[in-house]
Structure formats: structure tokens, C-alpha cells
Length: 199
Image 1 (cartoon, rainbow, N blue to C red):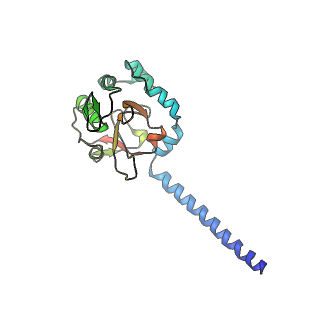
Image 2 (tube, rainbow, N blue to C red):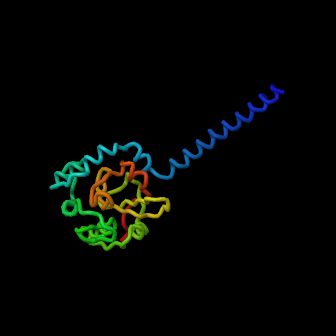
Image 3 (tube, rainbow, N blue to C red):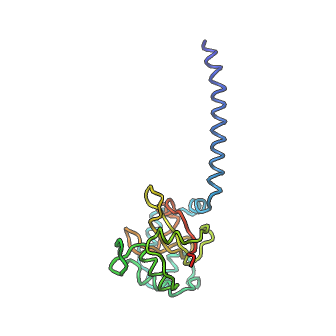
């Protein structure tokens, strides 16, 4: 009786192990082919403490901005954009806000796009996302848009403006207008779309 039980277990275990290996390979290949930003995020992931140290101080000039972005100052071609960011940097977050007393993410992005690019965006981050031509993160250019979905709904509810070197500017709920890094786990885990605005 004992031999019969042992003989039955071996083929069942063998089949289960093969099925698990096949399923794992299928899921790995399928997920890998969908997007490149997850690979980029994992490769460039930095510790929260390192990023926080680099993004908490308000930059005073273009040299300060270039240091935050880890690029040379000569890379900052659109100087109006960076002076705009310096002026707004540290403005507190306020839901529905559109002034330097308090501003939300889509309000900040709207004002930036209007003043720097002379483009009028929709008011909400979700509506802005509906009018964006998708790009891979490796193809993002200065001024492109990055979108996040915080929560379980999967709906876009946060937007920022891409700058350089995986960095973007946005109005965060905790720190107000700030430059953050897509490699931060908090943002990398919730990035759902990015690209250029179709105007």
C-alpha cells in the first residue's frame, strides 16, 4: 500500500513542477514585453534617503537646478522653464489650488504649460492624460508629462512634468512643488502613463 502511494506522488509532483516552470516563463516574458519603464525603474532605483536629501532644498539658481537633475547647467536650454520652477518651488499643496498660496498637481501643470509653452491643458490630471501620445520612459523629453495612479482604482490622479535624467517636477501632497525621481519606489510603483501632449 505504501509503495502505491509513493508511486502516485512522483508523476503528480513532476507534472506540477513542469506546469509551474512553464507558467512562470510565460508570465515573465509577457510582462517584460509590455513596457520598458519597469526595467528602467528597477535598474535606477535609488534609496529614499538619497533622493530625499537631494530634493528637499529649494534651488536658488540654475546651478542649483542642474545639481538636482544631475546634469550640467548648459543642458538647461529652456531657461524660462527652470526659472519658473525656482519661483514655484516649495509652494504648498492645496487641492483645487491655483496660486502661490497653494496649488495641486494639475493646477501647477496647467500654469506651467500656459506660461512656458502657451498651451491650455484640461484641468484634471485624468483629462490631461487622455490627450497624451504615449512614450517609453527612455524616450521622454523635457516638458513631457508623467502620470500616476495612487490607490486601487487604476485611474490617473497625479501628473508631473518631465525634466531630465529621470527627474520630474510636480506638486506633491506632502512637500508641495518639488523635483522628484521616477526611480523612487513611491513614484516608480505608481507610474501608469507618460508622453507628449497632443495639441
